[in-house]
Length: 322
View 1: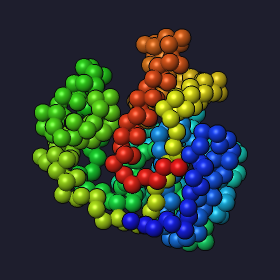
View 2: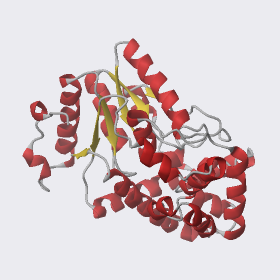
View 3: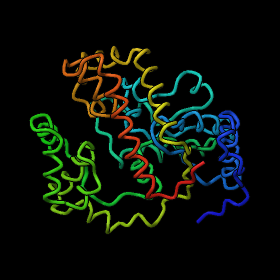
View 4: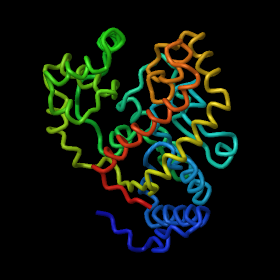
């Protein structure tokens, strides 16, 4: 356990009366203190989608002379811009961003590949005398970077294509039921809508004959690859819902539907990122299976469900909630 006593977090931050600007500034100062206390420690800004991670991480970078390392499984793809919340021009001017726009839409992104890219980015940032600050909501990728991965088989695109065909023909529940038959432990912790991870757990069993839960149990995730501190932004479910609603409204106004139409026209309708929260609903609309007047609420609902899942994952980690 890392002693953060020298970076005390002001008790008044918990007061509902504290205005948002002062709360943000206090969080930035706390993160900066953690970095100053130990520059080799990787500060990771994590938390549910729409909680304000990027704004915090960007200002921390500006405060300490840092550069941002993204941990987002959609921002890593070129072309998936609006609905992934990629940094805007102002945010990019404040801090250099790494591991965004790193892959073409049809390339495979997994935790192992991400960790390789992030390791290289962190080494480059440190070599230039800067401070890396990690930021993102793909917690499995964060965990892969700081704790390593169980030595499970590498991705197999043919198997993943077979799983996508099952989902398209029979629905997500069918794939989840297949997982439950061979790996009930993984099935119990994965929501049927989490198609990417359900597919991965099935893929591991099909390739190795062993369950993903067996690989995880053997690995244990007990020996860190690097010293790190995870910090997240504390907020009520009501506050987060309001932020999600504002963000969805803004992204739709910015041209999210047009972006998805362009991606589909370019041949990326079957890209893995098109099945991510938000993009999946917009794709359903442009494909004719979701009415425009129902689109906004469908995205908000799917995002709220996703945010709850993120909190569940993060509750298994030592996150310092600010």
